[in-house]
Length: 234
Length: 234
Image (cartoon, rainbow over all chains, first blue to last red; front, side, top):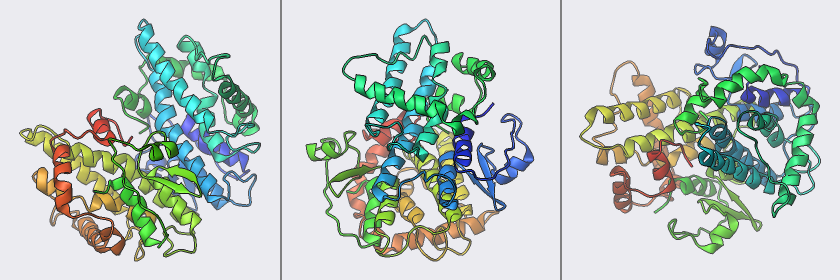
């Protein structure tokens, strides 16, 4: 089962056709080989030229810079557009993912008002993000996929968890924001069908027992614990 | 009085000798001209070619990329070194600054054990960061200043607040980590004496009434409120 933060780096490796060796680890029993590279033991950790790199968005940007001649260009050459995608990549990590987890881990399910509040908070962040997208799409910056799409993809393809565990994501149909939400849906479909994303995603059944723990707010990952404390992505 | 996040972008503008117009705003009464550029109203906000940019570290990297022929090169050409400085820049924002504020805003002062705990947490982060520095220094990557030094500088030059309000920062003298701390002190001195830093810093007296509010945990900035909730940099 692939951790979504690993998924970010993995799709970039696939997208750019960079040769790599994938080593799976048990996050609750971290092997010494990982801890030697990254004392905090977080994944993804990349070994490059015998040197370690970590932090998923840093790894993604590194792969783009270290392999400029591989595969599609995933970051614009224009400094302003580069900066804009960095702002919204950061928005994904600092706003969307924490709201995703506050919604997913929300308890108790009998508190329908509280559930609606975390749902609306999450939808609000998705809407703000989507408004910044190219109006035609399907990707964030237009017809070509970019780093920012791959950085968001692992959570985009997990949106089914809200239908499965939390009475629905309930994206509005029609209404004043219908143009934004149809842009959102178009992009989601493009991401789900992207080969690099499909190749790095397990079948839904493999995720069920893991996400059940999140949905019951009993997961013990660093992110689950940070969410319980009201903190952001660790 | 300069907000430390603004200080980051301002020192980069000075360092690279980029022409700019500096507009001060009252963060508690945000002018429309700011809100039009950045609906969240956070500073720094940069207007470039009639387009807005925000998030201090994004602005710093943007200035480096948009003005490659200005002043010193603040980011290595080597992808690995670039990635490494991004990891530790993020460490500053996600670890050092929140710990700085947990220490500064700690209450009550009669709880000496609790105060020692937040002090040690902060010193621990400074130590971990300093270990990653070039062993000779004085700057993070060696004899030349880089973006990462300027991104950390605004907090480095505010370390006096702990001596003033919180019974001392108490950097260990001698002991097993003495090499790390002497590297730390050497770098701190180099940053404090850097013209771009001196030119963008007000006199200490101007900060006293503001930091008194932080030290009493009564400040109402977004960062002060986030710290009270146990959250990170907003």
